[in-house]
Amino acid sequence: MKRWFIMLGSVAALVVVIGGIWGYNLSKKIAAFKAAGQPKQTVTAMKAAPQSWHHQIAAVGTVHAVRGADLSAEVAGIVDVIRFESGADVKAGTLLVELRAHDDIARLESLKANARLAELNFHRAEAEFKAQAISQARLDDATATYKSASAQVAEQQALIDKKRVRAPFAGHLGIRAVDPGQYVNAGTTLVTLQSLDPIYVDFYLPQQNLETLRVGQVVAARSDTYPELKFSGRISAIDPKVDADTRNVLVRATLKNPTHQLLPGMFVNVDIQVGKALEYLTLPKTAIAYNPYGETVFVLTKGEAANGNAAELVAKQVFVNVGPSRGDQVAIIKGISAGDQIVTSGQLKLKNGTPVVINNAVLPSNDPNPKPVEE
Image (cartoon, rainbow, N blue to C red; front, side, top):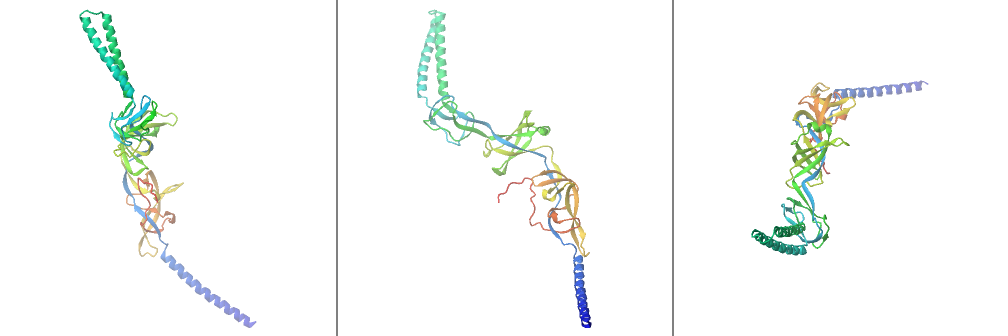
């Protein structure tokens, strides 16, 4: 029994010694951890600065030609000559297509001959009447015959002219839809003609915007076909009535299109500048935390390190009032001042008093007019 007591005492003493050593080491680690303070979190940050904001109304519009038509002949016939190339620019009055008109031209010559004879008879009858050689009735009959023959010539000439299709205005031709020798009915489309510079864009806006809309306001249009280009213009007309079903009003703007890149039928995104330019403190949208109880940002301020030896940046959460947004940016109405350093990404790791280190190697997007980027 005595040996057992001695053994148990030795084991207990050993446990006490080991526990004391472990506890001592643990206390040193805890003390060292406390001395080191909280670990620093890496964030991106930027200084809040005022930027000029011009209030804009956005809409989606459809492009229309200032003048556009599908050209066709007024009468049926066989295509005789095509005098244009697909895609060419033509002047007003340019002859484009001729339908076969040989028999019509021959009839016109016959009618002209009859008209010349009727004219001679009229002048002869007029001279005889002055000499009192014929009655008024004979003169009236010669006059009527002459006028009827002249009208028949004009009618036949008009028929021939209808078989010659000309450009009604200057513009850009499309792809021809007929070939020589093809029979076409009256109204069959031969080619399309579009006037492309300037060009119209029509779009609808809610009736609430009528108060801010004026003829002559500056607009800018962008197409996803040419994401790098901006087409400028001005509002040229506002429809005098509001659609009763949608409560929207139709607006037309005239855009410059010197290179003919905008084509009728395309859709474009339209921005209309309204009001005067304003100055707002501007931050990327990623800097704002949206919560049920309000919007917040983290402001970086100078604080004392845990060991008291050096100053460091710490995060402070503040409430802000946000204003309008544009692209990747949002305006701040209240809550921060110009020059405040604001965390733009990495907020999920932060709370009040968290020390941070800034690394702006990769920054969040901060573009007022972002464009799609293909990877």
